Length: 218
Figure 1 (tube, rainbow, N blue to C red):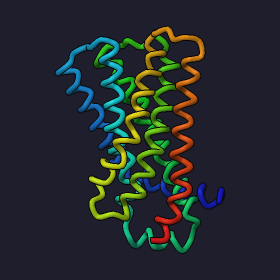
Figure 2: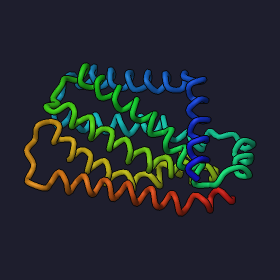
Figure 3: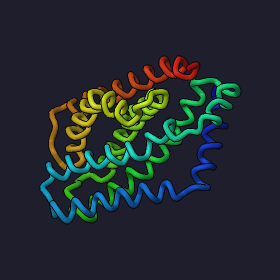
Figure 4: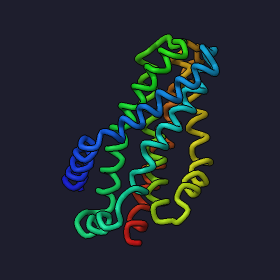
């Protein structure tokens, strides 16, 4: 399992390196979105800045992650079903998407701080929260992309399934990221939110691990 996952990850990573235009396209999309927000909102207050940041992160992750399974050619997918275990294939996709979101989340965070003002008090803490949020969003939309890849109305299905799942995560991330903006929390409140987010991430990972082998057989 570990060997198969790592080899698939290396294969996908090398393919992404050969077609960096995909990453460049998403980076340009992120910069365009942030610049439009700058033109329309200027330099908003910290609360509005925080909300706009996570809404932008949501759109970025949808563009970056959803293509994982939806864009996979049928012939290549059929080939992998005869060569590797289903969860090894799933985990390799998650790892590639995590690399994507680490890069894109970091770039978008600095772009936000440059264009829309810099209300961030603790940059390292806010960056860590950004990576934690990217992990959760990646797990959710990788799982949804795998499910939707077997359906006809793929984009609609991702939106319908993702809406009730992603709202709790976004709400918790908006609340947690205020710690990086200098807001004082009650003792233990930050740890409680972090544990809730990790619990949601673990639940998404467990659901994907259980459900994907059934999708794989279809």
